[in-house]
Length: 88
Image (tube, rainbow, N blue to C red; front, side):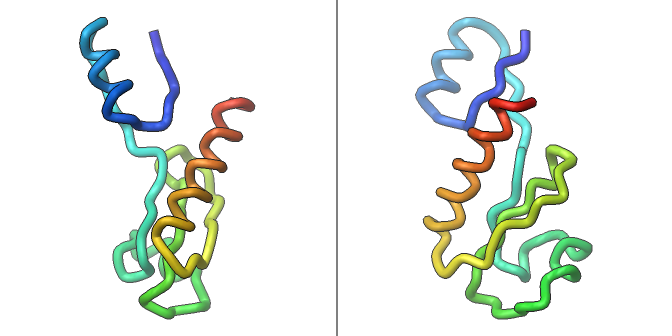
């Protein structure tokens, strides 16, 4: 059985009680210097203090940002993934 969810430590513990769990990355929330090079090369604003969200791990070329804070980027990531899970 496959369950899609945004990672949560409490949910992870619960699922482990039921059976084996496999967690896969759905996105990157990083500053430009920590994004994969091919993604970073697409970005014109090279400010190293800004945050970006890439969904490349789920084969989605969407790139969100820039964000002034990591928490803003994490919220955008979560909102996007919740919508993505509804339609996929």
